[in-house]
Image (cartoon, rainbow, N blue to C red; front, top):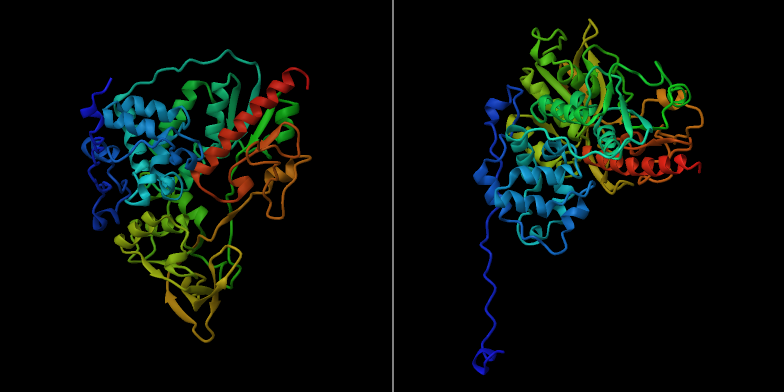
Length: 484
């Protein structure tokens, strides 16, 4: 019972939280990193991670979880980092995300979990991605593999076509449910876009291999150099090889060109080829690795997305004196991550905004000599919500260049769709599903997700699709087991 004296007291004021700024990521010096393929960010130190994790206010309604496509318990793993329980933080992440070291590096947190961080309304949001990377890297260095408790085997087996982020996530989820999962990969390395598309300086390939090895230890089977649609069709996997379900996660890797004069000249690349040569085939280490790549002095990259940034920064590291981004809209409309644009600018990439190529000019031997462009101005917004670029008459000019890299998007390879019966696709060649949450296609027992459904998107969205489809496949197999 309180005394009258106590009742008259004013309630104690809640202690004000000290305002701590968002902790910057330590980086290689731009002048140094522009000429090497080592990872650009060094990662948080223990001190920086503790300080940054202290900024999380542990909201009662954590919108950051809703902003995460795989719904990691973000406040809890950050709390564990603050308490010094880093291995526990990593395990919390891995309950919902098999690839935290990858997501911490390449996912656009600024448009997802960090975008809805409550702290971000008045200050900068908590650096969720940087903390995710810190905990995952700490576990790799200090932890040891412990086989999680696995359920009894169901006797069902699922074929997964493609070993990118969606395929790897789905395989891991299915294994945890007791099903057998086999991943079929057309290339000689597992990882999909993670190994052929994203450069070493953004995502070291040893990290991808580490995550693949983890899934293999859980029981996922990997079959490399296996082109589904050629070696085996989807129908044959189900009818002859006895797979109970198939998940199509083969991405969108078909190159797209502008269809302008001169695209058939020597020295014109798709971004897919340019990056695959350097990343997967290790051409940047020639002659240690036997895939050569031409080291051009002047390289023009067409496009403004993350693939364009990866291509132009690769060109610099391969020795280019001038590496250009040619983009038809303004700086504000560029779809690439802000961080990647800033890194490119720091490294010396030259941006030619409001500029659109009209033709590629060759020399007498059939090699690229220059690229002709026209200046643009922004008109009314188009269907994407961005202002439409409009050519300015008579403003054509040339940029001297030896190589042109087209990084304007990618499409769906028609091989699987054309070799699979009853599989419906849309006018762009993307597989039609009844819902992105289930991934059910028009063919019974066949599911699809990621870029092959949505068109080129992000790593984390493909992972979210893989997780959703795994749940839908599990439900389908349960019904199949009882004869429904």
